[in-house]
Length: 357
Image (cartoon, rainbow, N blue to C red; front, side):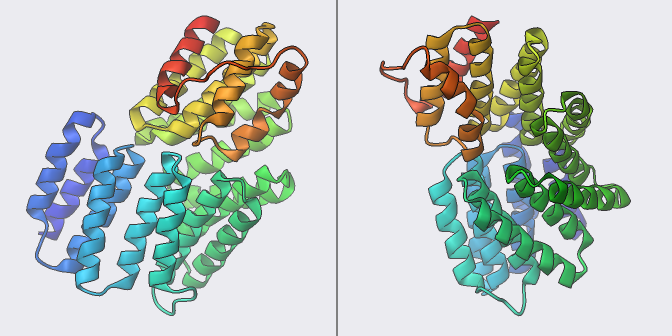
C-alpha cells in the first residue's frame, strides 16, 4: 500500500495540466490507508505539491484534511505543519493577513521551543520568514531564517540547512548586505550540488543573480537567471520560473532592449497565470512602468504605479523597486482617475503589454 501511495504522489508531482489534478487526487484518496499518521503524511505531501503547482483551492482542501487526520491522533507536529503549509498558500496569493493567522495558530499548537518536532519548528520559521519578507518586515524575517538555520544544524539536516542558507542569502540581499548574502548562497549552492537537488540549486542561482542585478552587473546576472529559469521549468515550478523571467525582463528593459524584455515579461505572465501568482504579476507590471518611462509615456506610467501600489497583494520589494519610477513620473504628472478593481489585474497587465509592444 505504501508503494501505491508513493506512486500516486509521484504522479501528482509530474502532473502539469490543470484538468488532470482532480483525477489524480481521486486516485490518491482511494489508496489512502486506515493508519491516520500515514494518511496525514500523504496528504501533507500532496498539499505541498499542489501549492508548488499553483492549485491553491485543492491544496487548502487537502491540507485541511491532513490537519483533521493529525488532530484525530493528537499529533501536534503534523497539525502545525498542515497549518504552516496552508499559510504559504495564502502568502502565494498575496493574502498575508490570512497567512499570519495560520502561522500564529501553528506556532501556538507546536509551542515556541518544542522538544520534539524540531524539524516542523524549523519549517515554520522558514514559512514565517517568507511571510514577514513579503510584508517588508526584514528584521523579523532574518531572525526567522536564522532560527531555522540553527535548528537544521542541530538536526544534522543538510537539505534543510541549504534551504535556510538560501533564505538568509535572500534577506541579506534585500538588506543590501551582499557579502553576507553571497556567503550563505554559496553554502546553499554547494550543498544543493552535493545532493543533486535541482530545486535548491535553482533557488541559489536565482538569488545569486539578484545580487548581481542589484549591484548593476547585468551581464553577470543574466546567465544565473537563465540557468535558474531552466531548472525551475524542468521541475514544473512556475513561481521560481516567473521570478527569474521577471528579473530578466527588468534587466533588458533597463538596457532598453525592449524586444527581449517583452519576451521575458510575456513568459513571466504566462507562468503567473498558470499558477495564479498575483504578487509576481504585479512585479511584471512594475517592470513595464520603466519601459513606459523610457518612452516618455508618463500618464500611463503613473497609472501603472498607482494601480500596483493600491493592490493589496503587492510586495514591499515591489514598492521599493518602483521608488525611482515614482520620482521621475511625479515631475511630469499625477494619476487622478479611478483605478480598475484588483480582480482585473490580469486584464490590466495584458492591456499594458499590448500597448507597449
